[in-house]
Image 1 (cartoon, rainbow, N blue to C red):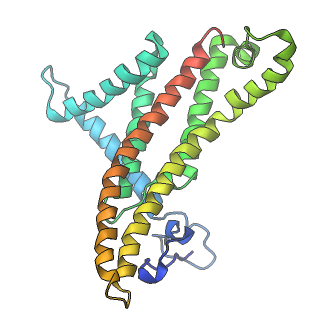
Image 2 (cartoon, rainbow, N blue to C red; image 1 turned 135 degrees about the vertical axis):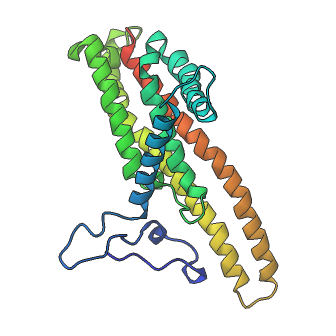
Image 3 (spheres, rainbow, N blue to C red; image 1 turned 30 degrees about the vertical axis):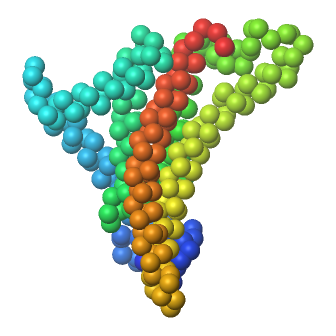
Length: 266
C-alpha cells in the first residue's frame, strides 16, 4: 500500500487523504502486512513505550521525599484517584484508579501527537483507536456489574426504573437497554474521535490555507496568509486544551459507567 504524497498547496483544501499514510514497511508483492505498520501505528507504540518506561523508572526506587519523576507520576495518579475515581465511584473507586490513570495518560499522550511537529496527528483521529478503548471500558463495566449483581440482576439494575409507572415500563426497558448497554461504547468512541478528527482538519485548513494564499498569484492574498498562519497558532493552543479535556472526559465517563454498574439501583 502506498500513501498519498505529502500535502502541499496543491492539495488544499485537505481531504480524507490527509488521514491516509504510507506504510513504514517496504511493500513486497503479495504481502498483506506492508500496509499495517503506518505512522499512526508507530505513534501508538511510542506512546506505550513512553508510559511504560516513565512509570517503571519513576517507581523503581520510591523515596519518602519523592524525586521529580516520582512526584510527577504520583501527581498524575493522585489527580485521577482524587478527582475522578473516589468522588465518582466512592470508596471502591481506589481499586479502579490504576486503570483510570493508565487510560487518561494513554489518551492524553496520544492526543498530544496532534500538535507535536513531524507527527501532527493524533492516533485518536482514526476511529479504530477510540473504539478499542471504548470497547475495553464497556467490557470492564459489564464484567463489574455482572459480578456485583449477577447477569439477570445487572439487567434489572440497568434497564428497570423503579420510580416509573408499570404501564410505561415496556417502553422504557428497551430504551434503557439500548442506551445503557449498547450505545455507551459508541458515544465514548465517537466523542473522542470526532474532536481529534475535527481539530486535525482545522489545523490543516489554516496551515495549508496559508500556503495556498501565499503561493497565489494575487499579491493582496499574501498578507492574508500571515493571518491564516497566526490562526493556526491560536488554534493549536486551543486544541491543546481540547486534548487535555477530552482525555479527562473519557476517563470521567468511564468512572461514571463503573459507578452505575456498582450501584444497587438504577
